[in-house]
Length: 252
Image (cartoon, rainbow, N blue to C red):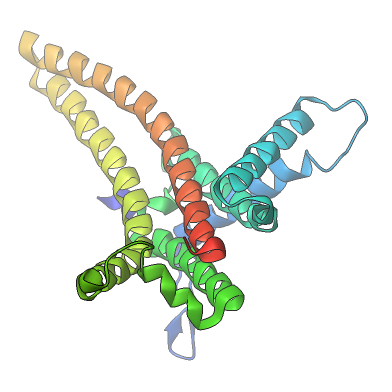
């Protein structure tokens, strides 16, 4: 499990007022992901009359996010598009960087920041905080009517309201856990099959070679699946956030 360890770079720890403020491998890869996101967006800021491929790709993704906001929230959703765009691509780039096969080089491997619950939880709770802020800013105390479904009989309210409240409060936990579990499980699965390859070669014999070959085939398949999961998890996180914002804007 050493691939998930958060360690200070070059083994040096720094403390400030008794707190460890070391620049870790996790922080490094978050900076790398943020730089890649800034580089990607910079390609769409050229605004050339005849756009190149880079500008077309950025503009296409902006249109994709705008369409998601329009469909899920309505015309008011465009004001949330920059946040959803940043959220989607930060998660996507973090996922993809985390599965780069750099470990084939000595002492060099990537770090999947989204495989840590602390990172995914911060993203989830920050998104949930925006939902609460928008809901109370637009509706005030009437925002609590979100827990009272239209048309529900009054005699069921003592049951429905607690259930609705719990399901609403569980949203940030489900957002953070879903991304964390998906990325962690994929990396562990690759590690397990990789160990089978090495152990099969070390065991020797026809059976050992068969186990190694089959395990290597599984690594290829899981790696392809991981690329798909990277995109799906980023999309699901952004989509659910937009749906939660819809509830904050329209209540029902």
